[in-house]
Length: 183
View 1 (tube, rainbow, N blue to C red):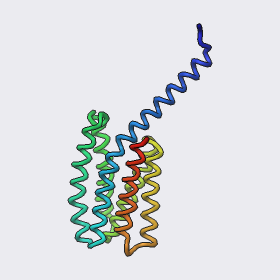
View 2 (view 1 turned 180 degrees about the vertical axis):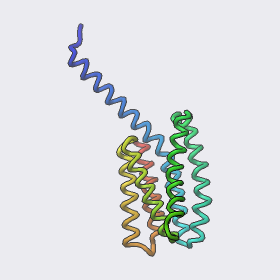
View 3 (view 1 turned 30 degrees about the horizontal axis):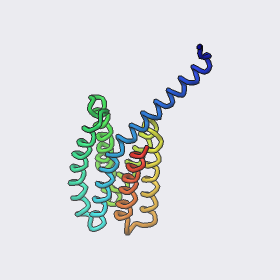
View 4 (view 1 turned 90 degrees about the vertical axis):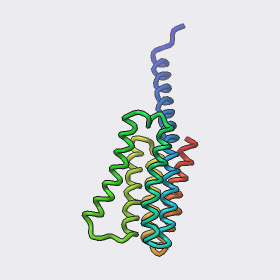
């Protein structure tokens, strides 16, 4: 029995679409562990920031190191990160975020701890939106939620900004990790 050309082409398109959805779901699952790690770092560091700027600054320094180590462990468990290309991609993303944050501190007038935290939060949201363009729109949705929540906290909850970003910033990443895990 011969399959007509149009049916064969249709079946091939469906198979390619299924492969694309499968690759995207795999990417979401890989990202979920990193979202859990950085959601916890973000939540804890900003909770300490609500106590005092000094406590927040120390917490960020310590927890970023913990987050990097935890991300390396999560990444080592993923096949994509075992390749040289996967490791270079992860380092480029980290370097871009860290390099931007340091550059802003050098170029701009002295910023308060709250301003620095807000800018860093907005950058992370923007990076997630941009990464979502290739990795999947769920990541863009998480980034947009983080940016919007940051602006709400800055404009309306300034006295509770760090606690707000701990809950909604860190929480958005953790909930995003749950959402990605189920993809």
